Amino acid sequence: MTMKSTTEYLTFNLPERMGFVNITPQIEAIVRASRVQEGLLLCNAMHITASVFINDDESGLHADYKKWLEALAPFDPSPTRYQHNRTGEDNADAHMKRQIMGREVVVAITAGKLYLGPWEQIFYGEFDGRRPKRVLVKVIGE
Amino acid sequence: MTMKSTTEYLTFNLPERMGFVNITPQIEAIVRASRVQEGLLLCNAMHITASVFINDDESGLHADYKKWLEALAPFDPSPTRYQHNRTGEDNADAHMKRQIMGREVVVAITAGKLYLGPWEQIFYGEFDGRRPKRVLVKVIGE
Amino acid sequence: MTMKSTTEYLTFNLPERMGFVNITPQIEAIVRASRVQEGLLLCNAMHITASVFINDDESGLHADYKKWLEALAPFDPSPTRYQHNRTGEDNADAHMKRQIMGREVVVAITAGKLYLGPWEQIFYGEFDGRRPKRVLVKVIGE
Image (cartoon, rainbow over all chains, first blue to last red; front, side, top):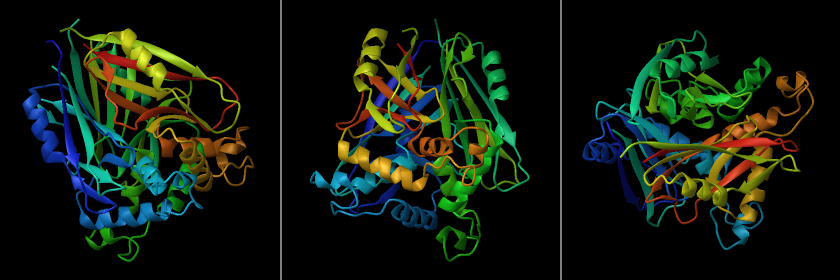
């Protein structure tokens, strides 16, 4: 068969600085509309203080992630801890949190569906919210 | 040429909580069987307390990874440190270790083979073992 | 349409132990030469003490990353902190820094171009420099 491809994007505007949104239903809808039966799906944050990652949809775990990431890379708008915050920005910590959680996921499409494990859910991860940000979804396959 | 694809999975059941298994030979066999000459291979853990990553097959380094990950995200089954462990689970730490080590790798297939650097080996990383878990391998190409 | 593919590599030899190089222009040139209009690009370090990652081209942030990674995984050539450094190596820390920053990025190609967000730039990340290392670039699509 010949190759098909689809490019879509989603937009998020989270009211808080840090938050996680389960985007699996939106991604599944894009896969259905693409009519790709066998292929790969790329889903990435287009902003460098945000992530797309796969993990569990459990609110306690999400609270744990927030506390853990805050300990590994504390928010600190002062220009002392982070040089990046001498540029007028206050989000150096968000650039670090995003590296821990990752920019993107690549997911298999098999028999027309996302081939996810039993607990795998796809999340948008925001580390410097309160403004609109985009997530890119690209499907290629047949 | 037209697109080909293959979907396979591997199952692991590690006796210990944390461990690393070199899965490069199994992945190479899947590539050979796929007959794909030019393409991409996705290999991902289907469980959210496990990783697939690429690094060195050196036992000292693996011991260092275990110690380092334990310091960054300590195992603690109590419900005090991790809210996730109020749900009856004891593996919140494993969800964090997996984010550091990553869910997946994407590897080039060139001239019918995995195109790996001189020391690159593909590992299954387990952070909450003692039960069977699956790894997905998807090949697309021509 | 039928599938096309391209395999290229770049070589870097950084004079310092840790450093970041913006490789976006070289990657864009490979995409143009590939003539792929719709597809995926994989860009990965072929060495296990180096990364390819996407973030901001801002020198203050890069200084922050270096300090942050050094705190998370300190360079220590002694055989005491890291078992890996009993093998004659001194770079166990570099294997850890690379796991935080990641091995690879996968980027969408749409209408013949890398589909990057407004601030997304692709970087080579070196954690054990002073010798030549390769980065693989693989394009597949139509």
